Image (cartoon, rainbow, N blue to C red; front, side, top):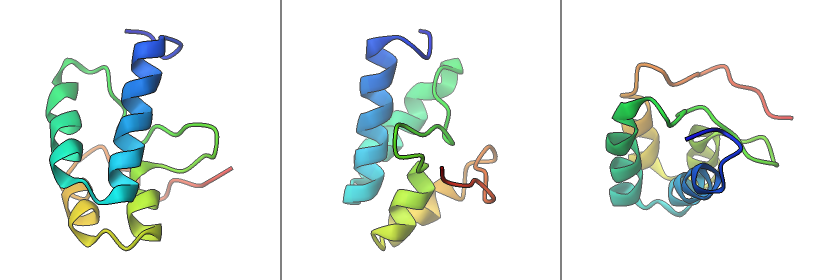
Length: 80
């Protein structure tokens, strides 16, 4: 799956939306499904926010805690 792939983009958008909405089950499912190396936990879409930034901005503590367990998470990611 390439970054330009529509399927990748829709899955990435769903992951970011789940982080913003506080949907821990969906975030876990996405994280577990990226074992094939196709998902980037620090990826952004047009607005430039990562899942961690969405979770923090929307006070989704459970999501923040879950994302911080990921070794690949970038704590210093910047927005556009």
